[in-house]
Length: 127
Image 1 (cartoon, one colour):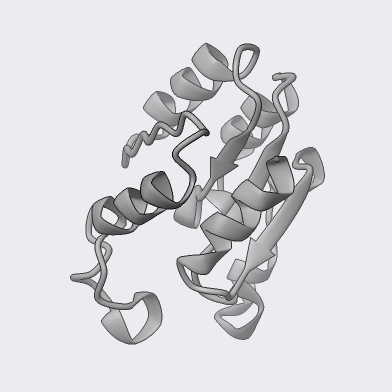
Image 2 (cartoon, helix red, strand yellow):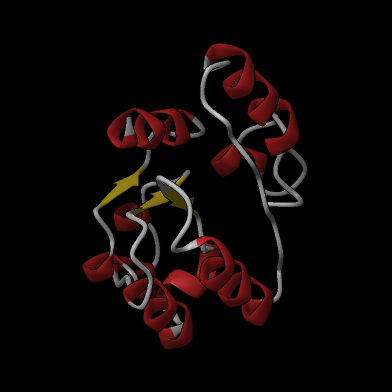
């Protein structure tokens, strides 16, 4: 996510997540939104454990960890806050290994393939 807008723009587009996040904040001023990004699996797990009992919802794009991390799946399974899994690209039109989500069965729902709009869709589903 830290390279959003710079890497594989044909798949992920040219807008950074920070720019998009500002539009979400402006569109939903009555909702307290926060954003956390890390490329480190353990930091993602720590954040899920930290906020997973005290927030109204979590929108999670675990990137490639979706398809590889049993540890993140266990972290999602172990918290009470509903989690919506989001992918910017349609993971089912990509490589076969991307068709498997270890997280999905522990999430309230999954959104894939709608670009950054998927985050707003997830937010609407949590309202």
